[in-house]
Length: 234
Image 1 (cartoon, rainbow, N blue to C red):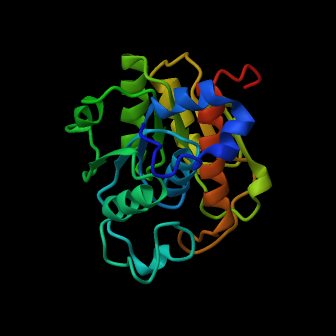
Image 2 (cartoon, helix red, strand yellow; image 1 turned 120 degrees about the vertical axis):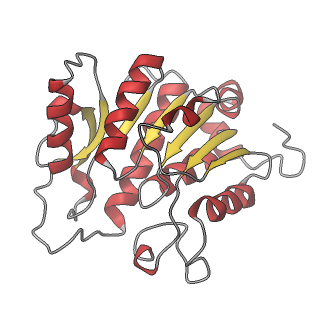
């Protein structure tokens, strides 16, 4: 990665982890599926941590209802493609980052397009149950490291978020569906997920805050970075 123009852009993080580990992160490739409330913050933090190659996958357009929680949602970006806006934001942070955009809704039929590139870690931050299920099976089959985000809607307390095995999740309706899938498919391997132990708030529709999805995204990014640099405590 060329750091000539802004050679000190990662100076503070390098002081924390060391040059060798920063260089390692600069060579890694992360795929983030879904770049909304959670995924947008995953990408933001990864790029600010020196990740040099990022694949962003989303077919959505920024909507006015995204303004309360999505880092790419501004009045000026409403109506624009999420992957286009996020690419511009990434380049504004680190113009040397290599960005691949996949402007597609991922299904059983087209999932192979995600694996046309070497991936060091995959983040599933999408909302579609079937897509989440297919991602788990494909990553396990291809031996790709991944983490899947469960539900962050109807939650108000970011301190209740945790990264755990899917089988240990509680108070998460989406995780309950995924636990059944894991059991039915007889999947025995550990499945890392981000989930909240908070009891969902009873609302009409999927009410969501600014602080729970963002905190979930930052936790996921932290987890991945620490995994990649060899933190033995996680």
